[in-house]
Length: 337
Image (cartoon, rainbow, N blue to C red; front, side, top):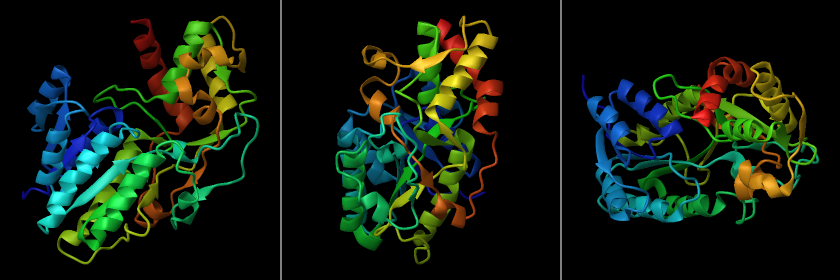
């Protein structure tokens, strides 16, 4: 079987490793950069080219982005220098008239308002056009990095395909890797440490979710359409609208998260009560750190119109079933180690 275009993936973590699985199934040669020798050995045994490095190794990142027709970034959504290093490599490809595709992982934390847990917003952002996202302030979470990619996309024009994927809360356990997401494990760890589950103020703010396996499938569907410009006219306009939401239709109040955490941990005998209550400011560092009030208390509602139009259909377990059946034992075990 002929190989598909090679991929440089930066950030082989919770999301990135699951995407690598999908890329290998689709016969894409994959190269990645990481510093964990055990993970590197596992990936190498599966045929992945691994390079030792970190997000600070900008020369390596630029060289790899320049060497591969496809680059996917699933590392930090807030590290501008590494993204600038990627763009520098893409610029070399564009200058040489080589096929160039870049998928960057941002997040719907970008959408968070100033609710501070006090209300549910009725505003739902759509990716059908860029207007709603373009109205967001430059100070929004992840926005500085996203704007750098938007600017590069306009610079390259139709010579490259650059896009920004914005997942909400990512959940689910990939049994191949057993890596954790952020928000739910942090909520569990807080409850285990302090004896109760928390939320910001009244916990009325709303987030959406997507299972990590559904997210990986979304990347593959998007990649198929973005890569069509290798041999055909592009099927997607990513210059005027580079944004793609990826949510599965599930929404929840942050107080609901606390209630599920408290119920399950109490049932397991890990905490003495199923009580939930607002988190005091002096404990923010034990939940989501400096973004507790904005991300833990903000509304983040999105509608993935474009991916559904491309045929993406989420099919994995819902958020609460997945969390209780697959994730909570693993999260508790990791806390107790």
